[in-house]
Length: 355
Image (cartoon, rainbow, N blue to C red; front, side, top):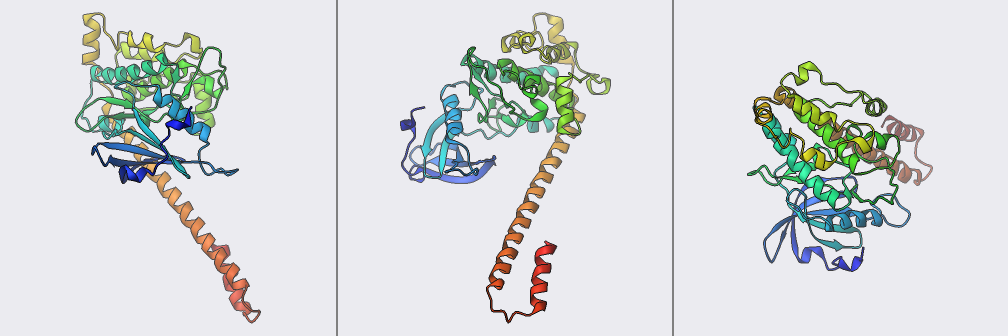
């Protein structure tokens, strides 16, 4: 990518920066307002890796994400406005998507028909079709990356293109990337990735949406990987008792181990669960309902796990800070004169050990 398209002037000269609205491994997303137009955006501040350190994203990885975003323009895909480059960060000014996760919106519903569910999946498919038509594979499709544009509409936006890649028939791309319960068998087996890799993830998303259960999730990551490669899933009667055969067929065409035989995005868009061809198919979708009670439970468990991860992270940070302080204290006291008593030295040692 030609880095001359990066703006080098201070970002704050043009934008007022607001509250944090999200974060990632090396990035934080903040709401910002363009001073001249008063238009609001989401600014993704990506920390750059410097020298031989590991605390930051590699510049080539940041450039890959920018290259992908510059190639897309679709109602169901987040858009890139402009890019700033500073000494420490690259700042991506993105379309503001403020409606929250699609799954959070659905969890607040009292009921959802398959007709409504398939309409959401159709929007995801249309966004993915645009990506695939532009030789882009997302590689991290999951509920957290499927958002609503704002709180007043049900328009879907695909977000987070940090793992997305442009691919070609001549390229043999293999990588262990993505989120464990959503990745395809070829990812686990370290085989070539393709557009079909995204389609498997859409199958997992649809399965969860209809049942409130994750099809391949095990008690450990290794068990999850085994379930994926062994195609170890089922349509449990208690979870799918109100699910149409059309919906099950849609999922089964995506849970195919051989990527070449897996349904493509065009196959899915023409599937009768997405695009009914007969009146009975329309009626089947309208009368079938997702398992909303189990879906609500699934989302509650997910929120609990996320809160536990936050607590665990805060505890680790707190322990790290305390240990650093205690080590500094010990170091400074060791420089004092030898008049320090044995009792003082023992108390310091105990303090460090007890942490």
